Length: 201
Image (tube, rainbow, N blue to C red; front, side, top):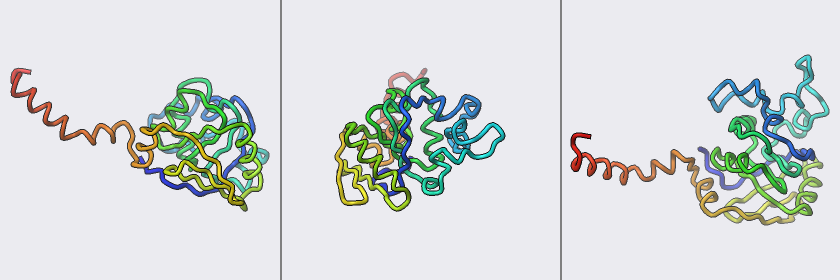
């Protein structure tokens, strides 16, 4: 998993509330267990028309936001089913952070496990960030995880809370497997001792 330290990039405003994981990645894209190639399915039913052409009204299809790294979203983002493909699709598209007032619990946890930083802010701070994001490519945001700060294009700073363990894992680029591998010496020692005590096992 790539480390998350400081992220600077364009933020796309998605003011819709209650965006569920089926909207983030529709069910027809769930046939794979690979984490790559899912960007094409991200918000597919909103990004594309029935004939496959792009919907120019959808934010990620607008020229200013095609390379967005941050998503500013309405309340209760990522609600609904537990599909891990939702953060996979966001990450494959290039989104490394999602900012909202609230998230679906499972989606929120899955983001951390896949290298995406979900940030909870107050409704007032979210409105400020929407204002910044609506200025397009001329207004980038900077997210400093170590300092737990979001810096706006005009120098404004919004602070946020994050669980210390999850913060550590993102800063170090540790997913569940990475955390386990950090204990490889202890695991090897345990297995060796167990083999000596129970050689028949």
